[in-house]
Length: 219
Image (cartoon, rainbow, N blue to C red; front, side, top):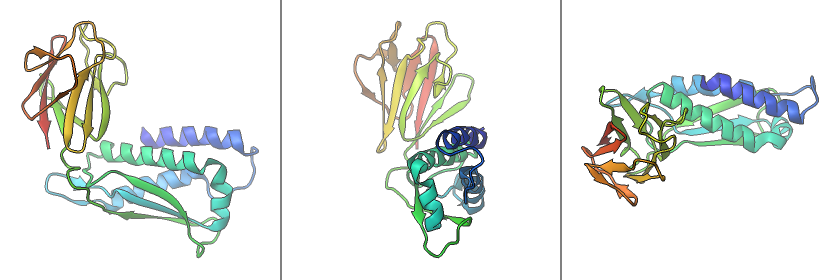
C-alpha cells in the first residue's frame, strides 16, 4: 500500500536524523495521511473517470519548516510518490504532471498545517497509453519510462519463459509513445517486425515479446 510504504520509509529517515523521542511539531506521516484524504476529497468528476488534483501545496509554519529542513527534499519526494500511487490506485485521471511543494506560511502556528489542491492542465498530457493483454486486461502507462519483462515489479510484468527479465522499455512523453528493446535474448517485435532501434507506436500497434502480444491504445 502506498501510504504504508510512505510511513515506513519516512519513519526510517526521521529516526536516522533526529534523536529518538525528540519533540517535533509536525510528524511527516501526518502529512502523508492528510495528503491522501485531500486528493480523494478534492477530485472532481470527469468524462471517463474522476480527475485528481495535480497541484499540491503543503503549508507549514516557519518553526515546523525549519525543523523539517534536514529532510525537506526527501519528504517532498516521498509525498510526490505517494500522490502518484494514490492517483493510480484510485484510477483517477490527471490533467498534468503532479507538482507538489512544501512552503512556509507565516500565519500558521507550530503544529498546524494545510494541504491545498489545485488543477493545472498541460496540453497533450491526456495522450497516455494503455496496453491490452491477450486476456483482455489493461495496463495503464503514464508519462515516463516503463519496463516490460519477467522482473518482479516491472510496470508490464510478462510471465513468459521466452521473455527476458528486463526485455524492453516503453517511453511515454509529450504525447509520444516509443518502445525499444533492451538487449533481450529473443528480441522485440512491432506488428510482426523485429525492431533494432526506438520505434514510435500508434493506437492498434501490437508489441510482441516472447509469445505474448500487447496491443497499444493511446489516449
